[in-house]
Image (cartoon, rainbow, N blue to C red):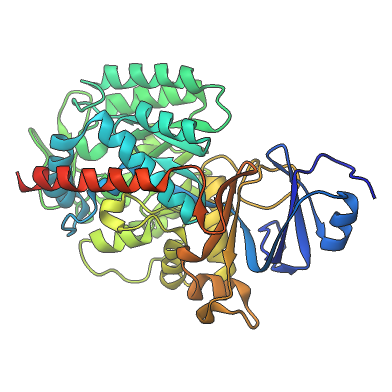
Length: 455
């Protein structure tokens, strides 16, 4: 039978996890891909007839999933692994990570680190990520050149950093970069306020107005917001205190301390809580805060492994479930591994395997505003897909395929990855980058950063 479409190839896995509403694990299904999109899903025999002599990619022992979505990371920090990691988060940022980044940060570091991070994510089945980069234009160029889907964070703070000298300059550069990528097919932008580095209420209000004009997402890290025991509210001048307690300075540069249950209430008073707002930090999110986020249509993003490593003290099981997952900086989490994050989330939040995997796919897509394009296997969506080999002895499924993936498989078993229908990994081999070149980059930066760290 002749083709009724322009399919370029069929993917024929043993199991299909589409993550469409009400769906479970399917068998005997194929996916037709053409022009970078999913054309059809249906029984293998039916699609073979429908698309005639279309090339077939048979994966008889594999499960096919939507590409994994890393809803928060800093990809260039693949070069900063190996630092001592000890919480609380603000102390670690202030005493360990920020001093080294300040000394070593260059455009070359961001470009090379992002390339290495992107290659690692692709090998791990991650086809979309949100990147909190210190030099966003460099991160955007790397992702655009690789033709991978990325949302690049635009840092906003009051003080100087490697990107801009003050709030005016940050917002000015952000708007210029927004204009550059306004119509880009795969690269999107969002605002990433940096409260740990100094951020006034006046700047936040300006940011809100700009974000409203651009219809832009705003994402903030809860663990970098001010936090004191309940009932304490003090005002002081000067620098923020140490030991994990942050500050927010108001428009007249007076440091105002607020207690943790009021973190999001304060952002609400500034008009920041709305659909398109994201809060990172699922383990430290109070139930009241989670309810406030849900009421405003905002997203709670958890980065379980990094949050566990950087928590101030042991905490009970979280009361609030996230809607998406990320890895945070690999300098803290260690790996850009969404399967590991989903496994950790399942254990922490009491999720069933399919629920946890949904957070790492469709949940991330929805949180990033991309739910209409990616995150599930449906006709019309982009062909961002990942195939995982389940033939290893530790994860051969008997009854529960999702459980076999979540608790028995690792990212090393990702065999094939497609980004908009383009092969990024084929039979375990990276296609978009030269692996020998990447190995040379890693060795070069290992030597260079070792000298920086020693200094």
